[in-house]
Image (cartoon, rainbow, N blue to C red):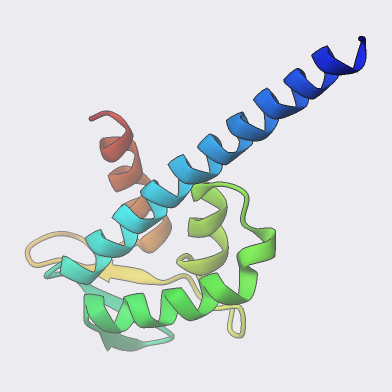
Length: 116
């Protein structure tokens, strides 16, 4: 009879974990959509890219680091922050605004998205 409460707890925890993962995936999907639709330019290793081009690269890194990504913040850190080869931070260039690191730009959007 003691086994039933343990299974109930395990079921609850697994459902909670799935919900956390689903929530992170929703946020990641939002950020990818945000990048793909931006008019800002994404600079990677000195080369300027459109949002769509940036998403293609981010998705490749996302696939590569998927096992290390446990949260949306991890997604930003591993997939959309800096070059693993050069160590150089990605920059975002928006019209009439000072360039910013992609990490700051994406974290600002994530905070805005979570506030909705």
